Amino acid sequence: MSEPSAAGAKLSSGQALAAFMVRHGLIIALVVMEIGFAIVEPLVLSPGNLLNIIQQTSYIAVFAAAQMVVIVTRGFDLSLGTTVSAVSVASALVMTGMVANGSTNMPVIMLMGMLTGLGLGLAVGLFNGICVSVLNVNAFVTTLGSLNICFGIATTISDGRPVFDVPREFSGLLYSGTILGVPAPVIIAIVVLIAIHLMLTWTVFGRSLYLIGGNPRAAALAGLPSKRYLTTAYVVCSLLAAVGALMLTARTGSGEPNLGGNVTLQSIAAAVIGGVSLRGGVGGTYAAVLGALFVTALSNCMGLARIDGYIQQIILGCVIIAAIFVDRLRTGAR
Image 1 (tube, helix red, strand yellow):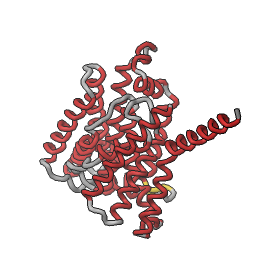
Image 2 (spheres, one colour):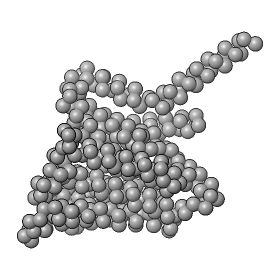
Image 3 (cartoon, one colour):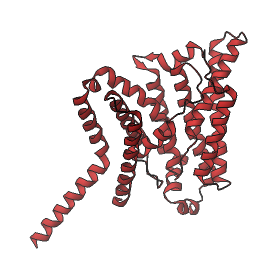
Image 4 (cartoon, one colour):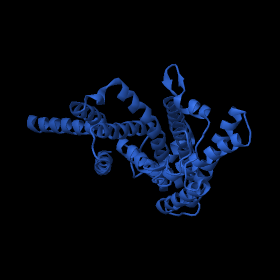
């Protein structure tokens, strides 16, 4: 009788180790990756580079949190990147236009620019949300259409050229400014992530999103206003994209019609790599931050190691596939 008991104990230990690796494997991989690249390029672990990684992570974390909000509902937003571009151009045009017309009230100029960007983000989110929840259009098709619409808006209103001369005060507020030595982008990201965490864990709306994504039928039987909540989720996603766009506009000092670039891929990758399940119902701000940190550190390390940009995309794609495989393991363990 003692032998089966020992076998059972060994099995339990193996399962415990597997569960530990599934939950904390990304942190271990992050540490191993940093040390490995540091052997090739010592600058990887320099204080200056580590600070740079933290600052870069602040942007990706905001976008990953945006994707996370809709991924937990079994959706995603392919238009996030072009929303960033459209918001950047629109907000920059408003600010430079007001300055060109003789306005000197910089707080009002910056406020109008930010409100324009947030308003555009709100409009995109409403469009996506209504199409997905009310019209029952597939999220892939909806956001793919929005991707093209936002790209068209960005390139049309800017004539396909960057909008230069964004007020330096705007960059000072959202990029180069610091509070107690902490860079403005990091502070903004922390505030945004705390707000999203509280929304998901302390509000009926936030907790309902997990039920809608994890078990839509149960959500319907529970009487949840799923259509309204789904629409709101896409609005939150696009508003966060707008916040990130304003941060990036402040960093570049101009409105860029191609600013979104790889943001969509990076945001989805960060969310999935961090542990947000594409099957819905699983994820949180911790996952978004951890995934964003990993994606940023990986890109940073590959850049310092002088790995070709195209090869970097291949590696990132492989990492995403591996993350989805781990997600299946995690789902099977539950």
